[in-house]
Image (cartoon, rainbow over all chains, first blue to last red; front, top):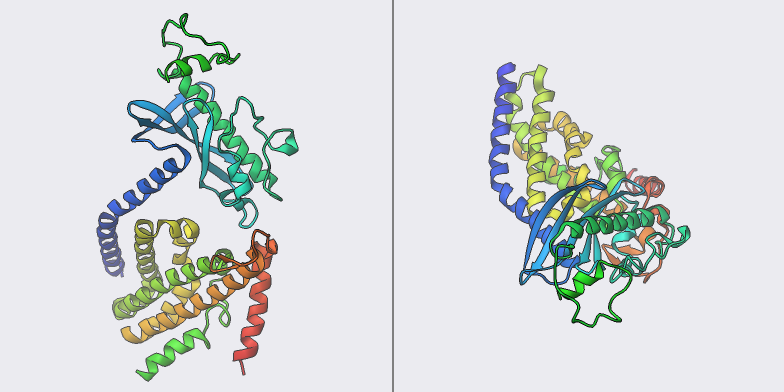
Length: 212
Length: 195
């Protein structure tokens, strides 16, 4: 009796061990391909990408991908989660180096099919994130006085989506604040450059323009 | 040969796990939001059912009665995990859609039910045919249920939308619609096939 059960378990674990070894590489490839595809969707073309997990005082741990092209930071694809209607809603938000949202994509969600799940297919809802400038737009749904069009009958999902994007923007500010590209450490004499018409009251814009 | 064909036919109609035996209701109701999802769940169960039926009928003479259920569950769980690895590796999109319901095949009463009721008393080939029949019956039921819910709820069939950008009757994509559709399909199926 014990022998029978023992032998069965041994055999089964042996089979699974082999199967795991065989499928491990394809599984990892599939996951990597999916991540690469998502990053490609949310950022303009880049040549290399680096995954970084960083901890910030205000917002906690952030996982993001830094996309580079010709040694220049193109932008960051930031993973951001908010609680939706059916569970966590995880987005990948592409923010280009100038702080504008390039595109967003849903990494995982458990929203209601046909309602909240439309956040992955509703064109009108998805298009509005492209080129969204968080310094101009109010990041909340119109029902709450913001500038985001919610998905019909899915306000809670739309709110969560908006919150996740806002979280990513906050993370972007934290990231770029510490990064050498947009940081205050850049010391260039700007006295000879005519900045009238470029400078706004947003200080962060200045170093970004100089580096272009 | 005829006997085996009859076994497959029985699984499809007379012993249809969903419409006649009313087994495996949890994945039936939960995964049939579209025809494709229903069909994939059916095929995943079919895979496990055929293999576990064969393995169990092969080892059942060696298994003492006292431990037969644990042994069967270990065998079934092995095939399910195998399926999970394969799906993750080669059909990651499908794996994401079905997600949680793949590991739950382990405790699907259809699989254990066929092992107990058929495979441990019959030969390997007969058990394979039984698994194939019941698996096909389950796949058929889930595909039909998924198709009906998709047509009513999303206005599409197998992903092809035919009502433009409009919404379907959303209730059918959600749980109440699942119960409703299943109920009416049960009536219809039994009206046609039960004499």
